[in-house]
Length: 210
Image 1 (tube, rainbow, N blue to C red):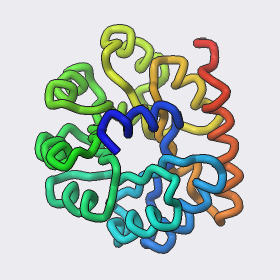
Image 2: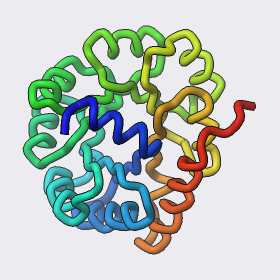
Image 3: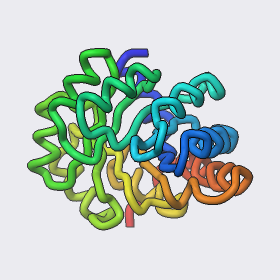
Image 4: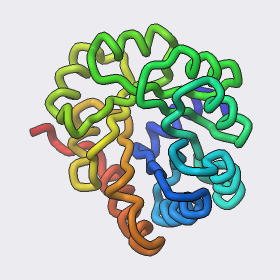
């Protein structure tokens, strides 16, 4: 899978389920529930103990899912994620070494940015998309304004997004949304149910901008 096909798959799915768990086993359990519920793009945060092992196991358990790594802060973490089989890397910041490491191995990289200056810097370094973060604090109106000024940027807003407001973020200019805490807490059955709601909300298309 190439960088552009990865980004196309994320744009088609319109959402990324973010796994931030207490262990690799917990991440795998939650990840399987997400995929069962219809969220087929999942990101294992590197704050999860044993994150590379979770990525590798999820790829085996869910071969049709697109599994990536999140909270990738440096080249060492990027390399570990690639070795584990991650198909994309997400970072909360703009790191040139993460971008270089991911691209060296043909992996899509989505750095995090908030201001137009940071967003532009990410794009000039070759970002495949930009994680608008923290999206909930910035607001849907902020994304709409920045996307209008920078229509060339593929935005993936993340942080404080729920199934209920995901369509509004898509309408404001996002190609996909990243959803974590509100989606992946609780038992596997609850996670699968919430995943179904999110997948349906995103598949329904962008809501009319308010």
